[in-house]
Image 1: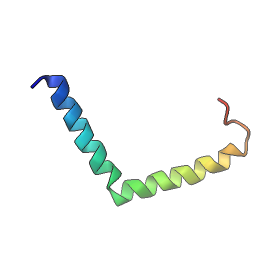
Image 2: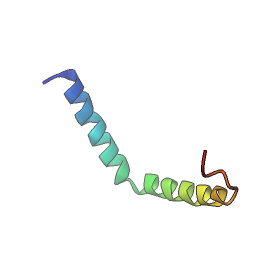
Image 3: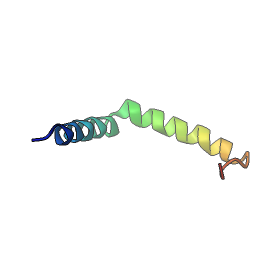
Image 4: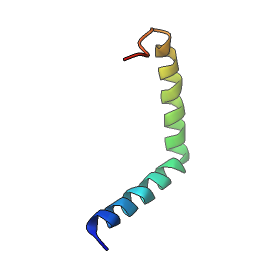
Length: 46
């Protein structure tokens, strides 16, 4: 198996773990709330 495929599998496993981590989910939700506020600044087309 090539190194690229192994690395892809490693990254996929890490991303899946992060997506299922409640603390990371909480951080993402907090970031979404903060960015939602900035959308009112009119800077959404950057």
